[in-house]
Image 1 (cartoon, one colour):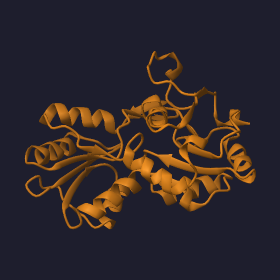
Image 2 (image 1 turned 30 degrees about the vertical axis):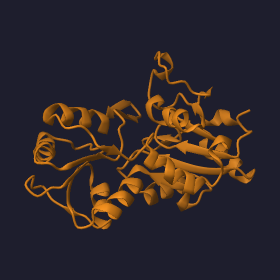
Image 3 (image 1 turned 180 degrees about the vertical axis):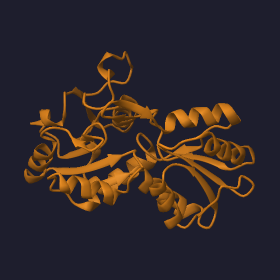
Length: 256
């Protein structure tokens, strides 16, 4: 049944790899799908690297894929910001890669709350009080509040680390301002990018991911079958949730 689909939409972190360790037999599974004529793309909410970084990592580890097969939340938010806010000043709670990407999209980076017009939140492994206060003060002065992704945590080899969703919650409580829009899974912004890449009707596709509130929710909202893996976010099978996947598998290797 898992091989009956025409298109496969894979999450990356927690599904294809964790940190720098590829899930056993993931490359072989992906390569078999591609060689059998299936359309395969990858989508990630993680913004600490670029699509090119993730492509290079996968190729180095034996995945026979193309660079254009990868979409990140950074790609989606940068396209939106470039189309709507060129030359505006922004501040990002995020790491150097996404700040550079937003700057390359035509916006101007600032740490002055008086002039910041847009605040962007995403994963930041060097998050500190100073960054939170710059963002909070800018929001209080009317800056628009966006997020690249809304994951509460990010899976790593020894567990999970704080991600954008937790930072968003802190800023909302601190400022009483609500997030206006996010651009990763399970947003409509992300699904529009997916439609352009996959070029197959979504009801003939399967989303494979490790997280109920992003990967599986995106499938449920947009009418795409889903497979939940047990290799990323921990204890997910024990959670009583209304969010239900179409299939449950141990890892991507179980597709074959």
